[in-house]
Image 1 (spheres, rainbow, N blue to C red):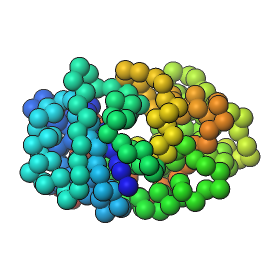
Image 2 (spheres, rainbow, N blue to C red; image 1 turned 30 degrees about the horizontal axis):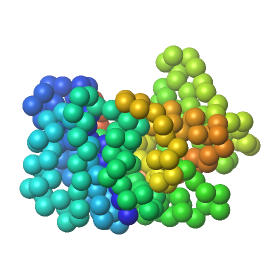
Image 3 (cartoon, rainbow, N blue to C red; image 1 turned 90 degrees about the horizontal axis):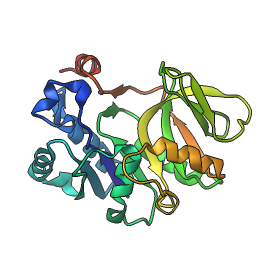
Image 4 (spheres, rainbow, N blue to C red; image 1 turned 120 degrees about the horizontal axis):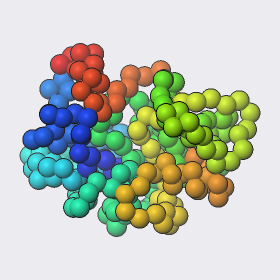
Length: 242
């Protein structure tokens, strides 16, 4: 199994901590976020990790070397000019993937107890082939995914007052927060033609319109932290034990 960790962000909402340290190496309970995510992916069966880097890239690469790559193969995707966001980062790293099986895409600033093995199995076991499976949870968010009995069918932005339905909903519908973890089929590389910096969610919406299936994996019953700003960092530290 392969997994990609999205670690190229500037971490602007974590300044001043990220002025000298990349977001990926900010510690929660004494452990850098990159290490937490990498070890969980390896425990779930990942034998190759792909890590994209930009801000203080050399620090991230040295850290991985010091940790002996957590005992697996690690490949680096350097985003030299600018961070390429979730979709652009994945597209830029395409040549590093074997493309033989579904893979994880995991935000570096997401800490959770979600069962990664169960999520991967759910992706494989669906009788309707899935393009992607997205971890979701019931929580307040200004940018929810729209989910029905089949899976993801749209996205909304409450701050800007718009909603996009990529296909007609089926049965009961709900709004759920995206949890920053994907399982993606390698078919995505053939279907993704966007370039430069772009969101993978936009790709999902376009491909849903073309008949692809994007499923939801509900993790509302597990602990989950998105450490995207100073307030959330302090909350995670207080609850996890730092």
